[in-house]
Image 1 (cartoon, rainbow, N blue to C red):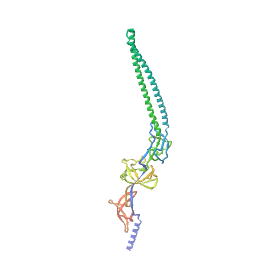
Image 2 (cartoon, rainbow, N blue to C red):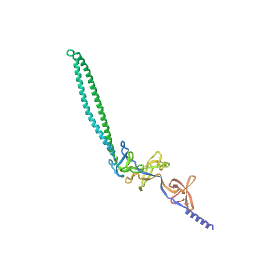
Image 3 (cartoon, rainbow, N blue to C red):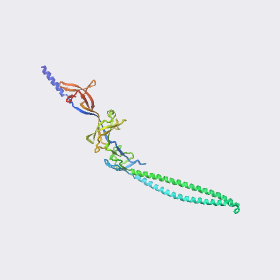
Image 4 (cartoon, rainbow, N blue to C red):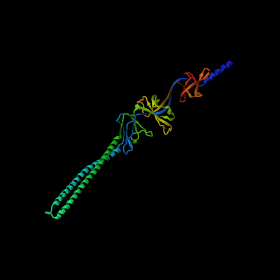
Length: 386
């Protein structure tokens, strides 16, 4: 009777064990990763903004090459309304023509005045010569009174000559000053005209290099369009080098110790979900910052290189999902967190056996998303009780 009860008890015990939830051990290759998101960009990108034009703070877009166009260096990609600059050019050209005419008139007037002054000086010189000759005459043929009058005439003639010479020098100096002022004004207006013509030329922007056109949204997320008025410092277009694509991402402050330069990364693009690209951590920021106003967590900036970028499908701005590989584990067992038992800093799992179950010691190599990766006294095919 007792043997019969013992057999029934064993059967019941085994039945209870079989009903317990368990997982069959399989050896796997597992990557422990830090998951993040990022955005595609190019490490070799030229940004295009409106030109810097004196006294002009806003520009109206009159032409934009369609986004996604492949362009060659020197090809027109952007243009702005130059009407205001053209009006300034016409005003400056009119002023310049007036000053040049003034310069020509000054030259003629100066020459005419100089001729008059020269005649006056010559006449005064002649009167002085006559007065000197008369003053030399003696009393044999001239009275004493005449001699005195001639001496006075000589003094007057000398004074008159000195005055005419002074007037000549003064008029010549004044004419030279006026002409120099006119020439300076002509040079100023010519420089202003050259600057204005350069401003008009700068209103049409050519591609500085080969590339694909990417529109840049403003702070409200709106992309530029023909007819828009934009500020002179606003970035409107980019010409990225698609063969030098990178991923820009951020690393949470509490996770930065898990990331290092050269670390391998798996990259999936939302636009190409069925393909996985590989890359490496290329740069790590040295300064922690607030991620954004909407998400005020502290992060470090990072850039990831892409081993073999696909320039046919990759475009700046594409969203990327990232697995930054912290560890590569081979021949390990992946188990739920609930299956691990800890005692005196040692870890165990409960494994089914013929007599019920037994504890097997394991070493925890890593944890990720509710799973524990272990190795130790478990083999492929074992059933671990959860």
